[in-house]
Image (cartoon, rainbow, N blue to C red; front, side):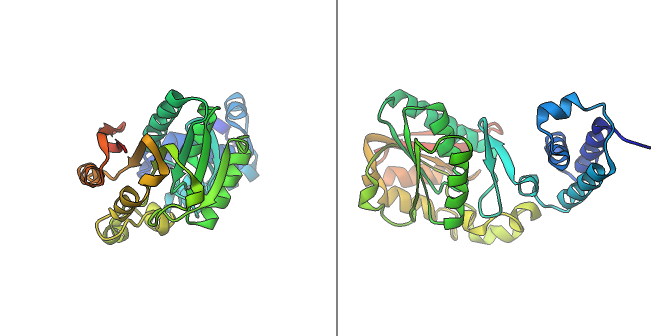
Length: 285
């Protein structure tokens, strides 16, 4: 019996729920839009129309791969973050909703500075945080920095996709070493570094462990290697009174606060994410 788009969407949602996918409704919709070549508005408009066999087959194949653990963002090659549509592939982490807290704070600080504000997104990956700042603070100038050439390729693509190339530049940089002198100084440095302890990586969920880049996950023996290096070596990249904002793991806020205090940062502030986890640590230098 022929199925409508809404029938397929509901079938997909049910299968994903049964597989333990938290965002089953969102992912079913996104996979069906991708399989049918529709945007969201067209999907909702056509929800009562019958679906061709080719679309139903493609959707079924995508669902099967998702149920087996492959993340939806990698299946469709894009994901949404803070009102941005971003290209995503397996060389970068998938942007998480919790990271929007970090982006929101960076946007707030950059807006306060206004004209001439320079912002650095260190360990940028897809560029999601820095590009969110560039979009919402048009007077800001943003540098996206990462050690991975593959990640920088994705970040550049995302800057072009979102019409932000005039505000944004990409730069190869190792966060564990002192910044290059030519980089200059910033009012805001925001960083979502690798922070998973090396020994915890084998126990991560299959969808993370086997698909997302370990280079962007592994934070060393205790998960704090990047926080040590950045707090110790990147002060010269901050303007006087500038802010350094970190995303941290669920149990790392206290340790990162101590590292920042030991290196002379002050006005240290920690913030909760939507799951009531201490997710953001910020300090001034």
